[in-house]
Image 1 (tube, rainbow, N blue to C red):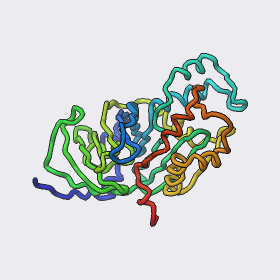
Image 2 (tube, rainbow, N blue to C red; image 1 turned 180 degrees about the vertical axis):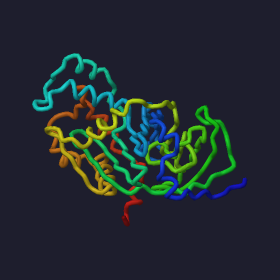
Image 3 (tube, one colour; image 1 turned 60 degrees about the vertical axis):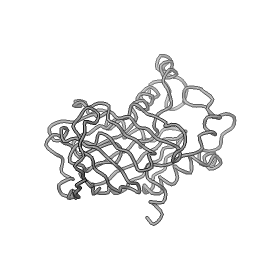
Image 4 (spheres, rainbow, N blue to C red; image 1 turned 90 degrees about the vertical axis):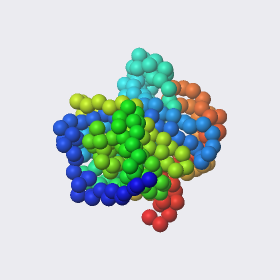
Length: 289
């Protein structure tokens, strides 16, 4: 099969394409992830969103956004008590199993911030956005309803296969994946640990979520802990929090009694059973950085 290397130059990619200049977009993705290579079923967040506001993109869970929005209404920020019974009742009906990450990407400046929430802690780490060098093949197909072309490349410590469509001429994609000559509609790593699949696309008129999304991880709240380090340190810390219960207790301030989620459910057993975690960027990537 004929292949050729497409090296997308920094100067070209850091400029938004005309479509991005004309309007903002919201792309919906399904995100599948495993805890370890070849192991178990995929955890799935069916409601990931990529919101593009000009040169800036936010990748986050719609379900988490909805829960956090309800929490802001349901609870008093000072006392932590219930302030709105209707919002609290709605909150108890919302599933708490969704992605804990929010990725803020500044394509114009070539930077990104990776954010996480775990129990009472908010982690935020900034880094430089890598420039992918995708090897574009002559393989084409219809993917997620769009005519698409296949490309491959090494990126942030993993080998990725992506499909992109030039029908949506933006150089973005889910999470930190970007730089193809069109929207990335499907992506999978070589170990088949992670999948991203486009579920929908639409113009976005309201830019109001942008500041709210950022405020979720940056505006300090009572009884919460905030950690801001370079992204490599944040990634290492989050992995340790996810896999070392003693470390989690130490950093979170200790736990007396069962672990309860925001809906009042005891999730101690599920949490202990879940103490396996593989990050999107492998820890080995940060070894010499």
